[in-house]
Amino acid sequence: MATTPQVNGTPAEYNTGFFSSPADLTNAANLANATVQSIDSVASSTTSAPATWATQWAAFKALWDTFYTNSFTAGELHVYRLWLTSDLEGQLVEFEAQIATWGAQAQQYGATVPGGVPQVQSNALPDWFPSAGTVVAVGIIVLATIVAWKVL
Image (cartoon, rainbow, N blue to C red):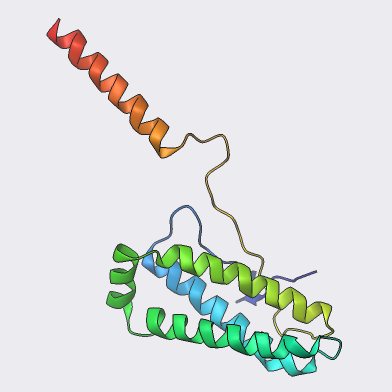
């Protein structure tokens, strides 16, 4: 079972999901990067891991390093621009899920990940929440009703 690392005595968690600011994403990416570095520091001690595990981990880490470097190390304005023009949050959430899986695998294979592996917190909309198309359709119907009522 993965443990939640502590930051200044309080549990750390990824802060991504339904809505996150560029600062939230940067904080989550920094936490995810620290977790990747922790997993990498113990990857060689996964004694019961299949022979291909370390190679696959190295390939994933290279992808993460590229994403993290290109997205979060060039300053706040760069993160803000990516936040506005790309699916930065979606990419980060996907990486976080993969990092949690890699951390859990490392622990299953006998490694102790320093600080543990944070659990990905889902802040997604509940299943009962209507889709965007439904909201738009209802809005158009309400607007048409108001216009018709005012005109007639």
